Structure formats: C-alpha cells, structure tokens
Length: 228
Image (cartoon, rainbow, N blue to C red; front, side, top):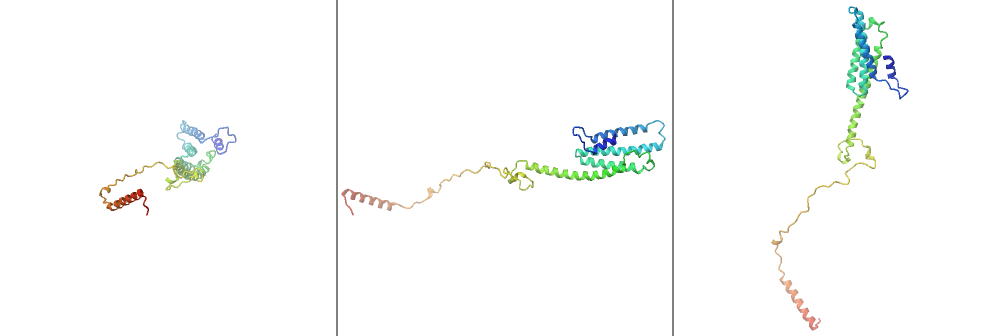
C-alpha cells in the first residue's frame, strides 16, 4: 500500500475531480508499519533471538527514515523550510544506520524500500529546499517593498526607498499630493507710523502768501475787465 501510494504521489493526477494523495497519507501508513514492528518485538518466545531482534531493529530504522521523509515533505508544502531541513538530516541519520548494519540481512531486507535511493532523493531534496527557501525570502522582501508602495505615499515622500512601482509609468502615477494641503503661515503684519510725530516739516508760509496774492489780483482783474 505504501509503495502504491508513493508512486501515486509522484505522478500527476489525470482526473482533477479525484483527491490526490498527500504526504500525510503515507505518514499514517508508516505509523501502522512501525506499530506492527513494535508488536513483533513483543511476541513471546522471541526475546532471546538476537538475529530476529536485530532484523526488526534494522527494519524499524528503514521505515522511520521513510516516515520522517514524508513528514519533511508535509512541512515543505507549508513552506516551513527550517523544520523540513532538520527532518531531512534525521532521515539521513536513520538511513545511514539502517544501511551500515544490513550486510548480514540482505535476503530478509530485500523487500524493504531502497535506502540508498532514499538517501539520494533526500540529498537532492535538500538542495531544492535551500533554493526554495532563498526564493521565498526574496519574495518576502519583494512583498515588503510592495507593501511600502501600497501605503499611498507619493513619490516625493519616498525618494530614499528603492521600490518597483509600475504605476509610475501610468496616467495615475502618484507623484505628489495634489491639490496641496493647507499650511499655516504668519498673518500680515501691522505697521504703526510712530515716526510721524517726530518729523519736522519745512516752513510753507512763503508759498502760502504768494498763492494768496496771486489769487486776489486775478479776482480784481476779473471784476474790472482788465487784461494783460
């Protein structure tokens, strides 16, 4: 069942209406397998069988490695890169322990999943995981930059921050606040003519007398019809 489900997990479903398998499904199967192995160790009469105990221990390591691998895969799906990387390292630990002591049990372990194939797959998955983590960090940084653009600040207020804003080349480019907002300014000052009381004006009596004489002579000439 685990082999068939693992094969279906690696293939794309032909019918979108059918539910595609998930890593959680395989985790459940390997939990059952590990539970069965624990029960085998508890069978009466086999406590002194060292070879059987060793064989079950190796099988447990192999299935723990596969179970841990699919737990890591489930973390990858939710983009928990650190947890997945730690679990991949744990898979390699289980797989190395299972393959190093399997020399004397080749025949009894031949039906188990290939541990070397799992090790190769885990190493490639770790490389893909690190690349995905870097890309996700770049996307997160780009999202932060985009959020700075979406705060409705005009271009004149964010000259110090570099960000890609496609709206700047459109007709709705947000460059400045328009119309400008009201700003408080000082009111018009009041001027008081305090120097007027200390100004000495020139005498005007001579000009006033000339004007008076000229006016009286012209008046008399006008009455008697004298003309010059």
